[in-house]
Amino acid sequence: MFLAVASSLSVRLRRARGIERQQIKWQPYTAVMAATGSVLAYTIAEAMGSRWLEWIGFVILMVALVTFPISVGIAIVRYRLYEIDLIINRTLVYGSLTITLVALYFGALRRRIQSLIDRSFYRSKYDAANTLQGFSMKLRSETDLGALTDDLVGVVRETMQPAHVFLWLHPDRSRNGERAE
Image (cartoon, rainbow, N blue to C red; front, side):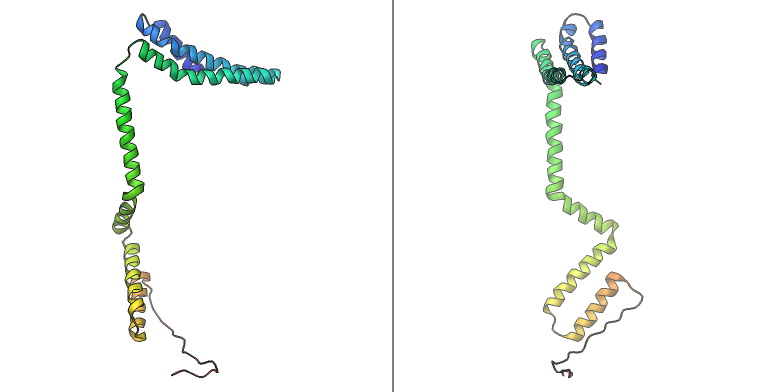
């Protein structure tokens, strides 16, 4: 990739004249530095088995990667590329807008959106959840076993929709095995 970038910038540098040439010459310089460091660190040093040559190539590569944004900054400031303000402005506006939308989605809207989707597309799941929630509220306050049994059978039919529903209640037995009345 570094070689492709370096050759692309070199071709553009050869065709440019005047100020454009001055602006562009910083980027091919850092790209050639990065390509040289990569070849030195990962090809020549491995072929020779030299750790210090690998280290030097790696340092050159890291310096080139750090200086590339600096070279772009020099080209912008030195050669008055102030039209870049429009790009920077749009980057900041769209970046902050994206961050705000992501924060809203994960912070507050995600639960509402999920609830809306569940209600719209997974209606039976949503209805079952609401039915179970309503039954749990009745369960807390109901004391009549007959009414509770009827409610439980109704909830099972509504949520699970089985073909048949049966409810067996285990009779209370006292400790000595007799039925409690």
